[in-house]
Image 1 (cartoon, rainbow, N blue to C red):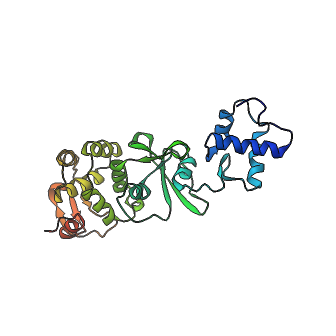
Image 2 (image 1 turned 45 degrees about the vertical axis):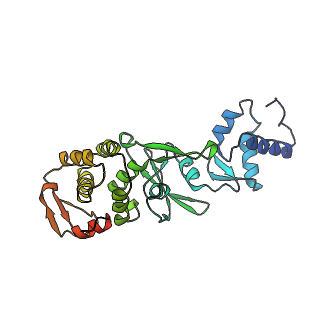
Image 3 (image 1 turned 135 degrees about the vertical axis):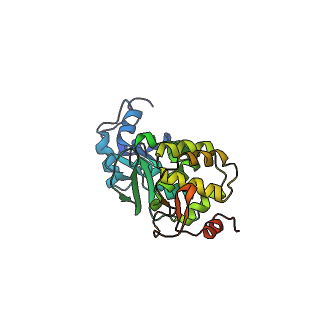
Length: 266
């Protein structure tokens, strides 16, 4: 970009120049720092220029220092832009992977950083903090400036068993786990990272009960994690039901119901 091409003491020309540059670089969403780094020769008073375009309704502010074109509404891209190292996860990722047809009423974003929930363009975002050592299975969806990070299929399933309150329903989660083809080695890695024996026992038992295809290694791994504490198969259910001694589980969802949910009716 030639020096001076988009510069002018006339603010209107400067505004037009910036919008043309954003279009040239196909930037629909950006931070102030990203724009400053891209245009190293810089627009004079770039921050003020952007805010002026926001005031005129030609750009929109998603939060301080972060902007998008007025018509840009990709909720997944926006959500991951709101927090460093953010990835679409939990119920939102279940939906994107086709595990469920249910749409969450908010977008779930996982990150090693903390951030309070907020709404942008009437879309609610829930930020779930996870230790850096437990972050894994991050893939990229979308392209170019519309790309965003999300958890892969296996990490999404493991995360939802770890935090089922963010999964959109326990039966939906069981169905997704037992019906969809999954990489069992990834399941072992991700479950091991979370280090939640209750989750591992639940998943291992369900895989064994429903005769989940190709899950032998995961079932063996899960059996190695069984401890002496009894765990409810549904963490939000009543403390009742059949005891499964070798898995140290209590079935507060009857076995026949689990088989039905898992598509393996007796």
